Amino acid sequence: DPFIIGGMSTAATVVFVFFAIPLAHLSDTIGRKKIAAVSAFLTVLSYIVLIIAPNNVVLLLAGFLSGFNMSFIQNMMAISVDLVPIQRLGSWIGLQGFCRGLVSIASPIICGYLWSYVFPQSVFYFLAATQILAIIILMLIPTEVTK
Image 1 (cartoon, one colour):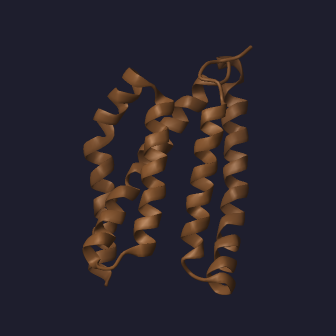
Image 2 (cartoon, helix red, strand yellow):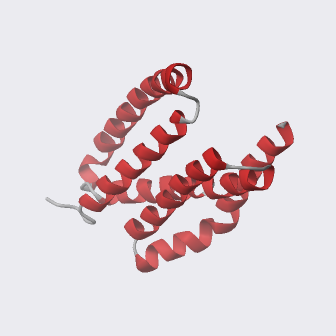
């Protein structure tokens, strides 16, 4: 139903709009890594809820939970700026852009293959797995610049 799909998107945006400032304040207070990890976990939960959704209300809940992915991305951007000396920030951001570009090329191919040749829900399992991998990498990186 197009209204449910629109509602899912709206719910995700509502999360980002209304939780952006409180989550940013929490990030500054208790730490970016902790808030990023919680946001990533909620994103993984959104994929699982989406897969098992028995009705439209649960689909809206999945959309709501997926809104925390935007908070995860915001925190990761802040963390990435903290990881390198200011003199290398441009190169670091360029390297990140290059890697995101490579992922942007590979992701539709991988997800299309999973959708067509495995089963449609496998796309969301794949996305959940990559998010879990991101949480693990997040926990392993230092929290300040190492020179």
